Length: 280
Image (cartoon, rainbow, N blue to C red):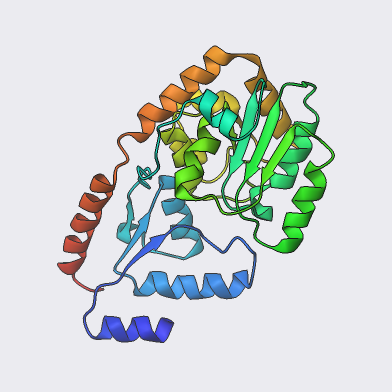
């Protein structure tokens, strides 16, 4: 990869690298990955990051020139249907009569902390509370682990398979709160998806999450180092419907400015500036 990029640069091609994660979530060969990433950063004429936090981290981890780093917020998806009501979504998913519904949706992987979510939900003493876990597991062994944890609590519903585009709205619209118990995160497209649907989010104060969510959302954030943080955030979400509604509305307003057109404009400007850039 490094040789190919060097050849492209030698032939006068401009290289722009978008950084979505600092290292792979599976923790495979991180030292080699960082070494390669430092070379990619050195060869790139510009680097795109989705937050100020990511830009600072890229400059530090990759020894990247800060003057070559551009921040362009990750846009909201704007591709999923939004045609069902909360009541219709819950009926379609077979939830029946229930109270507070917590939902996790997305790739079911260890770094996303789904096992911790199930454990925290189990401490909630409410017969009407529900937890939905929807998404394709990263492996069969992790699928079995999640199924084993969930089967002891009949309030937990699992849909451990890929969620088709036309069904995504069901899981998010059924939720009172969407939960992201990440153990490791930089940029999260799933948080943006929940915001786009006007749903409050429970998440750790890690990576770009505090920068992504509005101030109204902060009561549902927790410190990653706090072992009780996830449970306490879920308990706060159990108490007040008005607060959850206000948080969801604030999330929806915040994400409206993060459009694909705005990202395209930022990228076009970046490419043009890079084309005119004098090599150093």
